[in-house]
Length: 117
Image: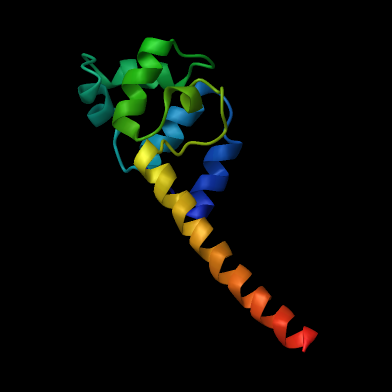
């Protein structure tokens, strides 16, 4: 999932697993009851308790990450980057940056040739 820049900054600064789950859930417009149902919890109260936790197990973090479009590492606080990108997305982003630099490099070479004349 890609986040808008304002949300991304907020999510990067959010600390504590429960707070991160709540922030992602709210960003995704998912209610506690809906997420509890996705997680196969019997009540919204179970989801409320998860959102109060400072740390979450890998199993729970992995399941939550699947529904919230992030990585278990982000939920667990091992990274501050909530974007969970596939290999294809990463390659695509790198290709876009390379193309921009290639165009900029061509322009610089052209300017250099003009100046050297």
